[in-house]
Image 1 (cartoon, helix red, strand yellow):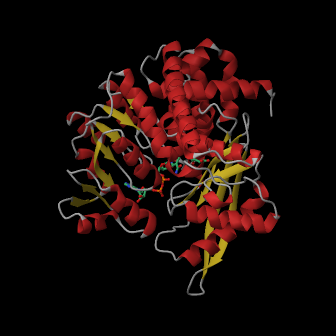
Image 2 (cartoon, rainbow, N blue to C red; image 1 turned 60 degrees about the vertical axis):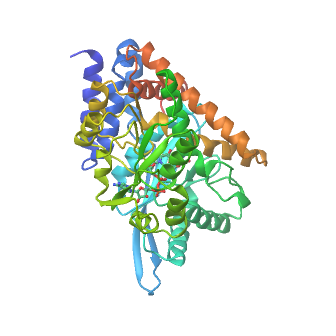
Image 3 (cartoon, rainbow, N blue to C red; image 1 turned 135 degrees about the vertical axis):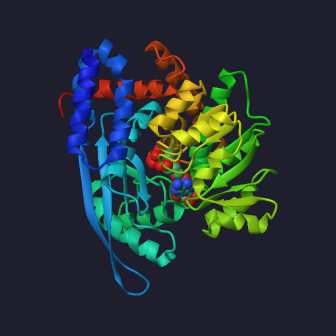
Length: 446
Ligand SMILES: NC(=O)C1=CN([C@@H]2O[C@H](COP(=O)(O)OP(=O)(O)OC[C@H]3O[C@@H](n4cnc5c(N)ncnc54)[C@H](O)[C@@H]3O)[C@@H](O)[C@H]2O)C=CC1
Ligand SMILES: O=C(O)CCC(=O)C(=O)O
């Protein structure tokens, strides 16, 4: 066993023992550590950093009591994991979903360290959320929950300390309620959350940023292979914030998006999905995707989200949730001739699925790089808040595009430098790590 393999195996053993029952966290750490083998071989001095980087600086777990519309007491659990502040204030979204537990928040917070570093902007890594399910709740219930959640969270965050944003189940409505309560508790009007409404400090383009950024990244991947999006058939899983705006940008660039999904099932529309209908159903009516076929009878609805990967396409953009593409789905995509895959969701492909894509030489954009446009634009929102100014849509969009092109180029350059040509997973993990590791070294053992 080489020195680097020994270090990695020792750290992985420690992570598994110290964090029992947290398989997604183990999965996220394993992927990064494996990528870092050539780095530790070349620079053994980084070995000590690895021991520290897998341990969050702080984990906050709290009770969130609230009263439902029937006057009954409900109690949820809240989380904020402040993972790494070496290069800037903790930054990362809040997820409200019944599946949330500390392991899920730790996997997301860990990924966020490297993603945020890749943006080139001064933001550290963090993530939070709750096992609260906003689905089926009234606006008043969501408001009371958000107010209670912030009543504890406010003492741990700040514009230069920790700046949360949205993720699954947390969109403009939730950010508004959270911000209102923060302001009420502190009396301070500053950029403590991103994804805010445009009338109270939000940035133009933040809503579109993750999806648009994903497609800007994809465009660079295509360009590198002498191709573009015109007339390509695209499958996008999910139908939330990331999926909708990835589909919108892909369509603007000439592609045909034929399928989208939610946690219940998927729709296939050979004419191309009508995004106005999806926005109406998901952003306004908060309905299931099944309702699409009532408005577009020539489209098909199928129960179960996984079947979406059996649709023949040139490009697959998983934009729903973690581990949604397993080995079987990846093999199905490859057998049906998929040519490019880029991740919009966080860790949507299992390690086995990634291996299938890589073994078949399918260009593969890993989440940390390809979905970094959302958090990058959040950092641009923080800059605008600090400067007390608002940039135009075009200005923010141009900066976002520049950042995504840069992430693609840097990721492929670093992959080449470390002998992993064309492996963007390795490139993203190494490039993201090096900046944070150098900052940690410079700041001493803290
Ligand atoms: N919102 C953002 O700016 C960013 C989000 N992400 C990631 O993107 C993914 C999606 O997040 P958002 O779009 O913000 O959330 P969202 O809450 O707006 O939408 C999530 C969508 O995924 C669907 N879904 C959930 N489980 C599913 C499954 N198993 N199969 C198919 N669909 C499923 C839901 O029905 C919903 O339509 C998550 O992995 C999130 O962590 C990553 C970077 C930034
Ligand atoms: O905009 C942000 O701060 C959060 C984005 C996020 O949660 C993510 O990149 O996964």
